[in-house]
Image (cartoon, rainbow, N blue to C red; front, side, top):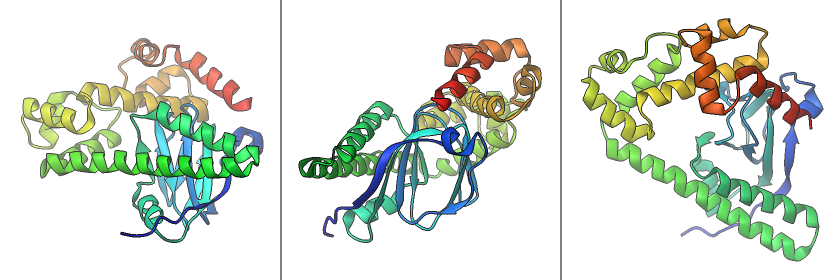
Length: 268
């Protein structure tokens, strides 16, 4: 078994891109260490080596050294940056995906807050405590990601079908994405496809599609000047009224009010 080499924590805190970039896309940069980030709320887009991912509060960003990164605001997150070159923790961090949607957001948020508190105290005893939280954070991340991989293994050969379906959904968000339509695209019966899709994503097809459409709508609300009707159509909603209804049901507020609140939060 490999030794556990503890990382050198370079910095930990809360980052608000609006304070440094004035709502402009950040410049591309090459990472020199491990960067773990937990967004405070939805909004913006993260880019790593050309891959773009809409930022949501349940997204964990796990950037490794030598990656090219930049961000489209708004973006506000908890973060910890650390240097590590070998050992078991290094291997565990390297195996993490660049982006990971978690079901344990509150648990991670508590750990990030502890890290920031211990980092800022300057006490030697808190340095020890900080390393213990790092160990717990990396272990929790690794175990959650491993559980997701095991689920993919249980789904077996059908996982490729799910990947194909997800790709189709992402590329055709404004099209007809009913169960009958998507299942036909992957040559499966609607009932069988429904069962394996829900097992793989923990969501029904309708829930997943609505979630993706809302994420796209949030991004458009934050970075474009288009009116609500245009946004609704481009995100696959049948009308602005239905878009407003679904958005409020999902987010608790109408689209413009939600976007305004996001901007206000990022300017704080």
